[in-house]
Image (cartoon, rainbow, N blue to C red; front, side, top):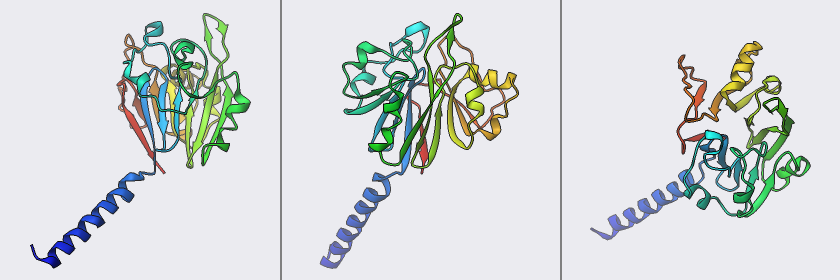
Length: 229
């Protein structure tokens, strides 16, 4: 190869490397990984947020997960919980992890999280969660991150708070919340562009029979959703 061709190759190779670094290194997307139950891992490539994880694997006959999920948790992450039931929260596992930890017990501190995470805001809503007629402290959350609106309902069975939302990019909801919304004739179309149905147990038989393109069933652990911004 002659010297001029060598130079062209070097320049081309450098340009390609630069394009890969700039074009693909910064994806400008929030990635959401489904871990299990209502457990999610959210990242924009800089900040790392876990919602309703870690929980007790297999609690109440819901989803189990591999130990590697705990081992792969990022250092100095943020952990947000809707409530303290075992299929959403594990005190034993959480105390072994480094990071900021939030839930219904310290909402004032949680809502200041935007002071440390760029272009981030979170709002908490007290929502109903009853088991055998007994009410438990439970919050649902609206995250606005890089202009994208993500609603995390958790375990609530009452759709009234969901009905007050609008212009959501994604709403993460259990199937019983959608059922309550339908019974109350709540117009879901104006609430969110997409609904992700989570907290599907191994014993549940839930299908999207109508193949509604706005509904995604999260029944495969490890699935990822990318929200471009």
